[in-house]
Image 1: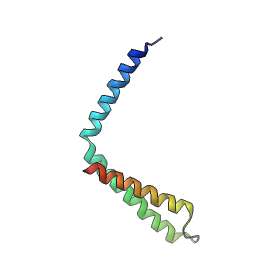
Image 2: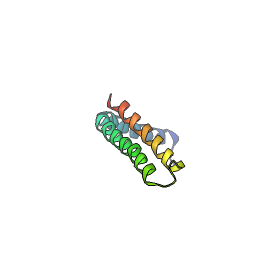
Image 3: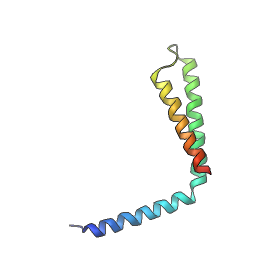
Length: 78
């Protein structure tokens, strides 16, 4: 069996590498998330116009998910 201290050590090493990678790429990731979120909530308006039902749960869900992703991207770009 693997000792718990060895497992914790492996996980901590992985987390340190992931945090270092994320910090180095933070601006680019933020830019992509902003573009993705903007496309999502713009697409929700187009979907709302094209559907005969108007505002459905899917359209509202896509809109709010797009807003959240775009906001997260803007925060990461700072």
